[in-house]
Each structure stands twice: as C-alpha cells, then as structure tokens.
Length: 247
Image 1 (tube, one colour):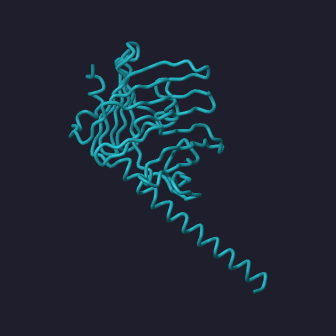
Image 2: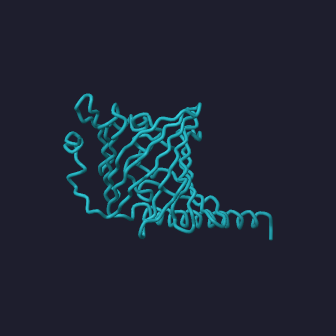
Image 3: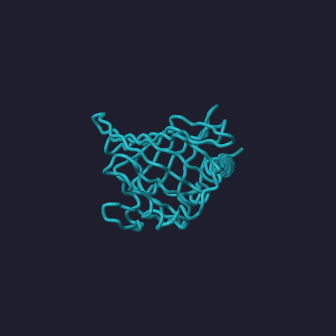
C-alpha cells in the first residue's frame, strides 16, 4: 500500500472511530439523564457544610423539593440569620430568589447565574434543573472496567457558564460520581464528587456530595437526609407565592 493510500485509510479509520465515540457518548449520557431524573418527585432534608481554605466549617440546614426534571426549590431552615432564604428553579431556565430580610422575590438574571448561592460552592446554574442529554453533547474520551469518562459541551444555542465538563460515570448504575467543570478559558475551576451514591427502591441518588472550588480553595459538602420519592408533590409548591408564604 502506498504512503498516500495509507494516510487516506488512517484518516477514514480515525473519522469512524470519532463518530463511534460520539455515538456511544450520546447513548451513555442519555442513560445518565434517565437515571438522574427517574423519580417523579423527591424531597429531602439537607445538611450543608461550608469549609474554608483553613478547614474551618460552618453548618446550615435546608429542605429541598424537586419534581420531574423541571422544578426545584431549596429553602434554608438554619441558622436563624439564613432561615427562609429560598431558591426556585422552573422550566425554561427561569429562577427566583427570595430573601426574607427584603420580603421580596427577585428573578435571577441570566448574567449572574454563575454566581454562588448563599455562600455555598454551588452557583445558581449548578442548582438549576437541567437534563444532561438535552443541553449537552457528549464524547466518550476513555473508559476502564468501572467507569466511562465523557466530555460534555453545550449544544448550539444553549448558554452555559462552563465551556465543558468532564463526567465520570459508573458502569454499574449509570450515575456520575465525579464531574469536572471548566470555565470559558478552558481552566478547571471546580470539581464535584458524589462521595456516597445510594439507592432507594429503584432510584439512585447522591447522598453525600462535595463541591470543590479550586480558585478559592473552598468546599461545600451537601448531605441528603430523610429522602423520599414519588410523594405526589403539588405543582403549587413550586411557585413565587409559595416562596413568600413559607415560614
């Protein structure tokens, strides 16, 4: 075989390899989305631990409600100076924040969705409702006996704060146990580790998660307690009015 023919064959082989990798990555990501958003609804108590660069810790309590993959509400219950602060995420990338001190619900503008929620390591975008396979394209970049590793990039027309995410997906349950976040400059800025992944009935969920902010050397641990699924939560719970009425 001539050198020219060999080059052509190599290019064709590489093209097919990349296409196969893309197709497999998309298939895996679709299954990840199905696994993560499988419950009809979910409610849980949260213990949130804020850990600064010196290892000092602050503790907060909250409650979370989610319905399908479109609605989510998080409300702080402790400490007293944080009680009542609430975040609501709705379909169409609509988000609201309620601050009891001002007794006013404020819609979160798109340009500030990459800011942190109430001093945690999670941004408003991180806490928003999102189906991975709807918003991201996936490329399988490597795998081993236990994990697939996907590179996720926003689909055309989808606005995200991150240029890409590297997701480590367990092969036994299609649940991600690690996600790396890269900013618009391609710099790794945050790492999410699902330290404990649990199963209740047929549903998998992250019981203990740790978000590491590499720029500020700050971490946020989120622990889910009293978790229950398919409680037939009312749509009336996920409204601006409910944010104010909650006491």
